[in-house]
Length: 175
Image (cartoon, rainbow, N blue to C red):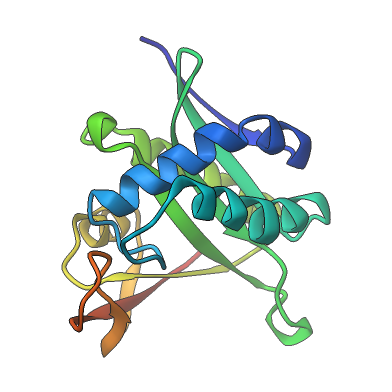
């Protein structure tokens, strides 16, 4: 199998909308803390991509990468470029997603490398992100040069629903 990482235009993302929705839903069902709680239907996932991500890609405020094994979409990550004027030197990482069956194959790292290269090309010298404290993704981000800025307790509801609130760790990378 051949892994290909490429940025997607808004039109390409629209063409991949069913796959993007399935990927997001699969990650949430698997326990990913990416802003959604169970029950989480594929229609809600599609609505998120259509309303929140595609318009931002179209206006240049966000870049979306897809990771494809052969022709199958198996991962994504986003770089949010649309910042306030006093933060034009910065960007944010959003929605690192790798299909559960494709994890531990270097896909997330390859996505991060593409994102960091684009951030550098955009002259973004500070990259920030947040992740559920203690998640495997936190170790990945640290291995990519991100440092912990701090932790906020009780930041987000657990993806499986219920009353539990998980802490989040804010991280940054200067470069």
